[in-house]
Length: 320
Ligand code: ADP
Ligand code: MG
Image (tube, rainbow, N blue to C red; front, side):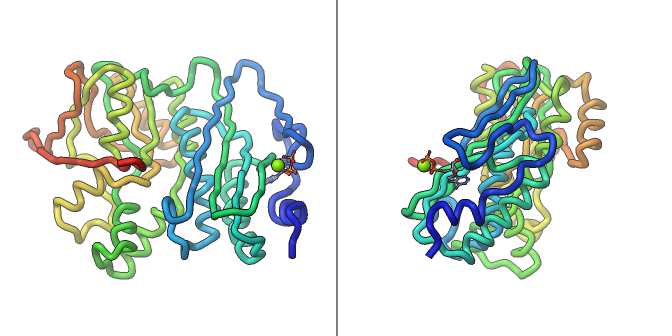
């Protein structure tokens, strides 16, 4: 049986990448990091709980990926560059096959962003994964939710609704053909954190948020904090290809309020359209303009012919 310290050494302790800001990683009481001059540290923490955020039979390498991806997505939404992360892990047992698969999925994504694991905590208990990421963003260039301005365009990255579609299939609410299921499951299990886009939008976008609980609800957080309103064309919001066989009602609900999309929604002045498109091109990330920020409070939904659309949408909320 692995001891706690063997487990950490075997599955989580790895050499730091060359040029890392981390001076001391795993092994001492604290990690030590040297922040660059002129930068703010961006810090965010996200927890994944078995039975709440993932099914007990989830693919374990994908779980490793997703645990870090949802955290990197928060850095992306702030325009921050990943620096390092910590991992607090509660495990029912020291199952080596589980640990090998989990750390493989975790480090594959960490390596992609040169974001080393620099510390954590390990305990026995119900399966629970809590990651804290650290990033950096130049002073005054962070993409704040409160920074949306009346007249701004509203943009989104990528497409929406497929993670919710996969969830519906897992819950036996719907049946999916294999190709659609594979596509939807990939979105649910292996979200792509939009870090390249987030950093490319520094100095161009005003406000940004990552969409974890549903587009309309999360856009609502920007509207609240910036004390503005918005009108969006719901037909302009890109719907994931796996949803194409579904009814209009289901497509709209999953696209506008599905959750687990991990796309960015951001606002930028209309005068910056070319710069937004250039930043998206540099980040190899598709973006779509879906609406405008206006002064009347609230969120107005329209269709492609500018007719009002009435939808009752429910964002995800753990306590409702
Ligand atoms: P302490 O007793 O001071 O809390 P621990 O004995 O828990 O320290 O951890 C020893 C070292 O291993 C520390 O550097 C800690 O950050 C690191 N560590 C513990 N668990 C993990 C983990 N799951 N992933 C990465 N590092 C870990
Ligand atoms: Mg400890």
